[in-house]
Length: 169
Image (cartoon, rainbow, N blue to C red; front, side, top):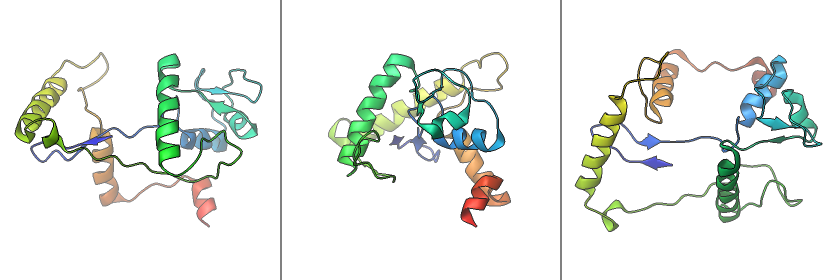
């Protein structure tokens, strides 16, 4: 999801896996022999596991958010894959890829764009000025970390784990 926001903030983007942990992190854990947190993965027999290798032997990633996440995952699977030109991952017709579904909504069809931007800015300011949870410095809105990371990587380069570099080679 991406939404325009005012004052040069850049878009408000929430880009995340609908699984409890993204497959890329499973690949990194498998390569480095690190255990995953409990309740993010099941093995091919449906038993909870923390061994990332179990995913690549017929296991599955669990959805984030329990049963509510499951409902959301199902909607995303149907919308993004089917309307994006693919089929569900569990289908025998599935081909690996990255189907994309883009939906654009004209803000002005619903409300005055200046009202949208004003209310958006007010909400973001309230969120960012909230007291952070213990152990945190500040409250962040989606895309803050990613924007900061992108700026840093434009300056310093992008670290690539060895197992991914081997795939490139």
